[in-house]
Image (cartoon, rainbow, N blue to C red; front, side, top):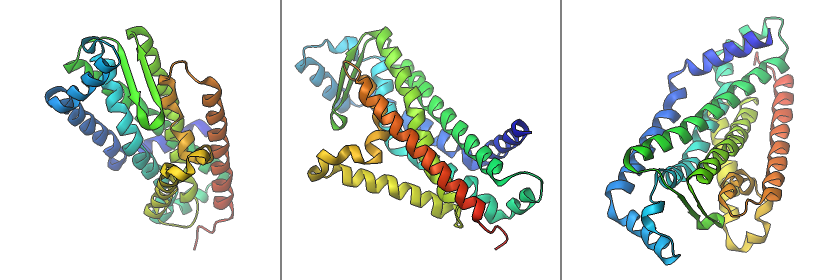
Length: 280
């Protein structure tokens, strides 16, 4: 019965047209970025200058892997939290707003099972969204750039790495896998707020506000020594997979902290839904 209920939640989620807004925006953003990288001389000239100053042959690193990573980072950094929070904020609050939760609760199904299946549906959506982001990024980049080595430079996160084609592919796939944790965490925050008695838009805005305030305070230079206390610092842990060598202790620490955040979001959201009066 749990499987059938989860399948029904997935049908409802992927049956909504607005569920696909994130996919369409991702593809559009990636297409614009790759066209600018291919036909605008400014960004390419800047990348070539950086490589030559570091003593690396530019032709070898102007590859599909480098451009795929250059597309994935800004989209995952800015756009992805918006769309996973939007879906998370809709999962419970939208059905309460439409009145369909009353019908669901009239059946012999526990409230915990209802919110659990909705969380799992949101988590699966988040994973699919990240996979589409990563695969489409490489696909777009492969149209305009040849295979080759990877050059990764993210000054804001202190990331620098140079890899051959094989290792670059593994690092890219690893980053995409770790990025799913960020997507699920932001979705879970939106889901938690949607379990309270509020509108879907309010749940989404609250989740994004927590994310943006945390990022804003983290970026203030005076709080640099405290950045490990902010959730956004750990949400961007997936970028560290491009470091040489990979700081596995830091990555495992961020994973454990995000697991704690997800568990906390789930407990708070489940409790809020248990005591909530759906009839009011």
